[in-house]
Image 1 (cartoon, one colour):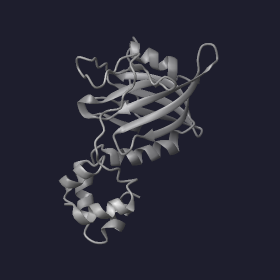
Image 2: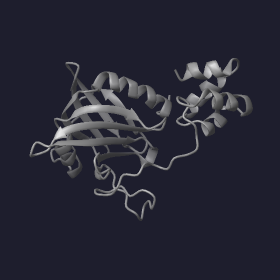
Image 3: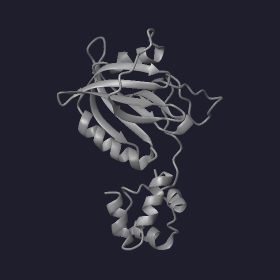
Image 4: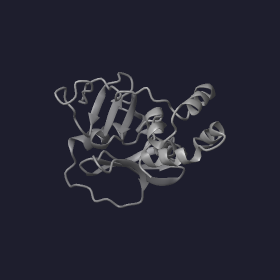
Length: 227
């Protein structure tokens, strides 16, 4: 199954069960575009891999032992400054998109509370891992910098305001009203390709499976699929 919004929805629920209110103990960057957080939660140690690789971008719990570079990058040093010792306050998905937010709280050098959000955008070659100051909405650091000349809509640089990726008019299949959903199911083409155009976060495999299920009692079947 592809890493689509549907997959991330269920991954988010798993991460919330495993990691919510856990403490980030270690942060490492074994590869240029990957980050590994070691988290102590529910009396267990967990390793969370965050990847912004252009082909293999993903989020997953892992037991793999990674070898870390001898010299830390500027990115990982900033991550350690803000995230080491932080408590995970919330883990949430943006709509049914491939964007995960990990909200954390920590203390700065003088003991003041600091709130930040680690944003993981799983978007192929545009995937990124971004740390944002929660109070100002400004980017603290990102694993990939994107200047104005590269993207006039979104500048991803330290100090810039964080802007979410452009939104579409697709519907969230988890929150759409029964009334609107019934209308769509009665009037629209329900092929896999059409479902991908109508609803957020459906990869080809998910859309194909859903299309094959929508043969009778479509409303009930749809709701059960996204339960």
